[in-house]
Length: 111
Image 1: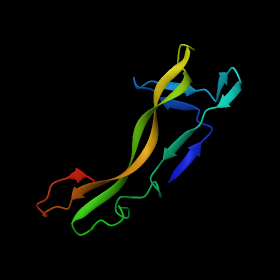
Image 2: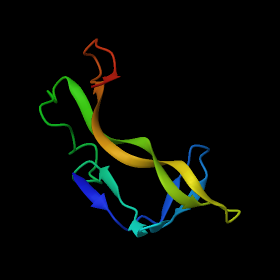
Image 3: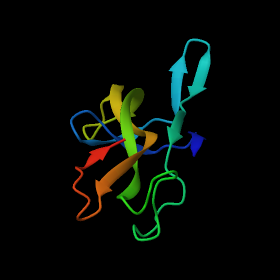
Image 4: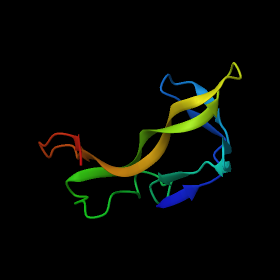
């Protein structure tokens, strides 16, 4: 499920530090609102026993949908009140993680 996030308040930067995301970017032509396009897995949270990825053979595999993140630039304020453009993490994909069922003789991996 993908949505435009227009009210993001905080994010985690490249160093793993929580920063405040500024709602507006000031420009010569006026303020611009900052927004992000985020993708998350549907139906979270669902217990693993009932969850699973679509199209996966449940007799052979235990599957789980997991959110993956990417870095994007955002105008932020850090803990020392310094404003600047920083790389921050946002949710950008939903991937299927597969684990072989016991006794199948296959390995584990990510599809």
